[in-house]
Length: 137
Length: 487
Ligand code: SF4
Image 1 (cartoon, each protein chain N blue to C red):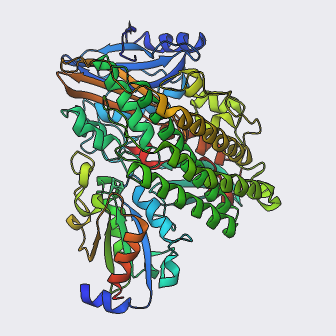
Image 2: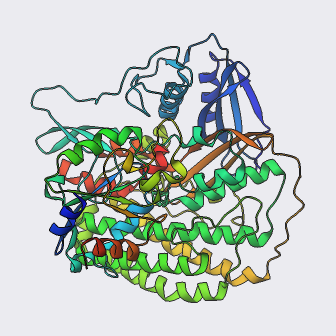
């Protein structure tokens, strides 16, 4: 699966974002990837408005109890092959929010993860580097 | 010092009257919470007197273990509506006469209630059932890079008759997870409640803990905290204005605003080691050292460009046309629901904790709050523009005198921390309050009433009677944090 999604996104990578309990730091940095200094579009990377158009989803946050179903339904709505990107330390393992009645321990407890982008939050240049290397560049 | 010392007791049946009486004599409601006490629980309603130097005070309502229902105070003080619903979810205590019996935090009755003598009905959207009204649900996952929230519109034609929001998708249960922790472990969690408002959360935690320790931070530390708080406001307001440019379909102005924000984050990283200023305020720890003159030199040209960018934005007739008259609120609506921050100031309410409940290095430095009266998206944008300029003035003035300020703390009380205290700050989105109760150095209750928690009900009110196509713009004109609200 991993190799398959990588081989289809060499020239362009269309992403859909799912916030699963982030502090919005990871969102903020991801948004800046598409601002003048970094300009993700020049690498063929862009955000799309529907999971059906997405090659991969970026997921932030520890995956709260509340967001489990929405994450699963977003994933189910994607075409194949599809990738899952854990954006930030919370999405990787829950980070400081890993405990409690309403929180989770990251995306991989629910979905297969193809790419982990560590950081709290990962800055835009790190996100961009991780995405382009995922594309095999 | 904000240790909670002024507490008056009320019985459950007298609580609504007690809250009404305080509001009638001019006290402002800070927050309501519930905590375990002995074998039962107690409600704590916190107030402050705007303009008074006294710390927030409380009405405490003991609820005996056998009691499962108390009278709601919503009729006496409507702004407690969400606080009471949250308490009902978390503690299983019913509020008789509350107009909304749906769950708030987790819509399905799962795990939240610490003890649950009575099940709370699940959440369901409130939808108008009249002829020709159409129900449009949106979210929780959205097309752009935004946080998770769900909006249920009842529309007729283009017009929104009613909007009902289901939030708390990002509810991580942070308050409960803090119980049992010491201060050091709590800090890393509290600062990650929300990246946009992290400094305000760090500052509130520090204020509460230092009050429990009987410690007053040295002048330089207070001054650096002011700089950090105002930098956070600058970064946040610039982002909000850029998002409004996006809402008005002005791509060039959006990208220019994003470029400014990126530069500001880079400057913060250079001087404080973190783009969002995580880890910059620690209770009872002197503020970080940095090159104050260098920071001022980095910020000067950036803020000059930001001021010019804001002038271009506000001079754009398309921007003005798009925002004027959209999502209008009256001061009466804001007062009833307890709205705070730029959203309140845009309706003529001159409320600002930096002046109303002076703290840290602010006394003597702040001027009158920036106020507009139209109550629409344009007024909320204009208030932010004025506040960017004011924040920069504060930062400049404080940086200029920073190196002359003493940095020696008074002796710390070595006893383990015990008791309850409040902490607060005027966050970018308005008044934000924290409540901390500790026993032998461990947290036994932590509660956060963020500005976004106070203001989300305003978004629902402001959306009604506007075209559904204006909702994204109305939402951006408040630009509330889901993370701060949901915790
Ligand atoms: S990894 Fe850090 S920045 Fe990202 S959501 Fe978690 S706490 Fe926030």
